[in-house]
Length: 447
Image (cartoon, rainbow, N blue to C red; front, side, top):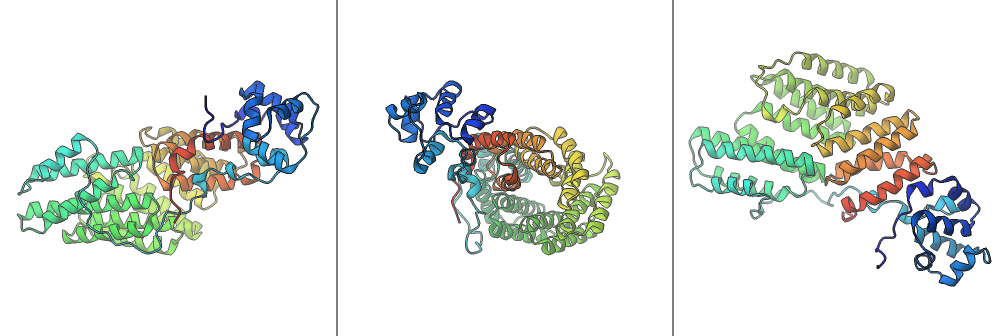
């Protein structure tokens, strides 16, 4: 059976076994090769092939008749058997850092203005049928309802899998709606089409934001604002500005984040029918901005206002679809994250842990980056074992969703783990990480 292109990882249990650790420390390759054979099923001929040694030389080492002292040979053994460099007294090997964690933000050199693409094929017969419906020369209320249903489906898929694969379909549908807007139609239909265009442009901006392609995201968010302004939908403008505020916190532009969320709050307060849920969500976005600025008092005040508004929510409130995601679980986890951004790990940890237990398992992306937030918080509290366990649990949902934003949260935890990389629990986490991560982001291009 041929060897895989990427050498098989040694079991984490072997790398963290006291006998293996001791043998590596003194470079007792006879014991190392014997353990690799017994516990990993890698036989001497395979050891020889992986480490570019002759089988007879490996046999002599295992019989105790030969020692391996040359540095280039020791490095080949580390690389061939995937033994972390520090265990053999070497520098960190290049393969120890998964490819995906070496990739910088995927942002092009220059801002990109959205251009009308050709209509992309849509995933799923259900969406195809929606497009067939919208191909009528005269859109009617059923057309609008079908378009809104497709947007809800896009958001659901975005939570489960990330928006990278959905984006061509969403952009194609956006441009199709824009074409419909060029013709004169009855006011209710025209108003509805503008609303749909605003939602599709925001969703497109969100998929770019999630991919950390910030210039494109801002361009589409701005387009969404323009559509919403055409119909004076001030609540939706507040929603888009809140997205732009969140993006600014990721870009480490807290001043911009605060300006955007303050503008969002102004729009929401000026709009008729703004519900406490909307105001609560915006207050927590304000808390994120203040936390990024390092303002403890203002952050705590914004958190308090978010909870005060949330307590006023009534079942009869006419909440719009785009804000219904902001439920009690989201309130709790965002509160924890705001405290975490301030460095208040002891306050943040139980909040994020509680929210993670409540979170919908279908929201793979949310579960992944909230778990990485929890792991970082636990690490800052000195709970290394707990942090590595939490991060390991997060790897499965992280590997199943295409999201550079999730990968960014993983990178942050990975970097903060650096002082502890020689600990067995950290070795086990890194081994699992290398197993799962390449399939997710190793193909990501460098900017």
